[in-house]
Amino acid sequence: MEYYELHPETPQVRFINKAVNVLRDGGVIIYPTDTVYGIGCDIFNREAIERILMIKNEANSKLLSFICSDFKDISKYAKVSNYAYKVMKKVLPGPYTFVLPAAKDVPKKLWTKRKTVGIRIPDNEIARTLAAELGHPIISTSVTNRKGDIYYDPSEIKAVFAPHVDLMLANGALNGQTSTIIDLSGEKPVIIREGAGDISPFL
Image (cartoon, rainbow, N blue to C red; front, side, top):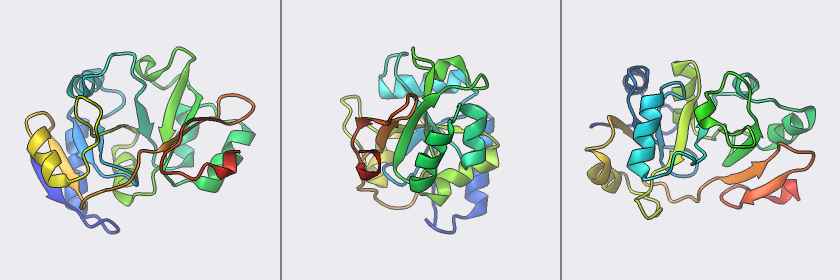
């Protein structure tokens, strides 16, 4: 596994480019978000998605959310009502995952039975830059062990996941919670999971 430590606000371009090249080649990477470290790959690479599910010991029915670089990107991959757009605009970038109706461009592998997808725009320059440079979203699922416990420390993550992923971008220990999940696929917001994000705007 390649391993690089990045500056959180001005990440080194050469390391970002290395990660993007791995993603384009169908690889799996670990990278920081505004909550915890995530495991990711190109959303259009089915084999890489299968690798992530195996690494996490997850069933194929597991909903895998993905990171978009900006709002313009979201509109390509989800159907966003005026109401949903206004709600998201208030809190993004931030520690939220929004459940939205899937657009046809999203691989069916990432759809729920209700034909929705989970989308993030994290308040993290590294994660957003990765998606922007790749040219489309990347999978975002928390770095956990097979019991579901989250790993926060980069050195521990490196030791455990080196045999399983191709590259890791690190910027120190991330002691955050997982993202708050809000379902905006209906007429009113539904809080699926309370996490790092403030839920008061949705009550």
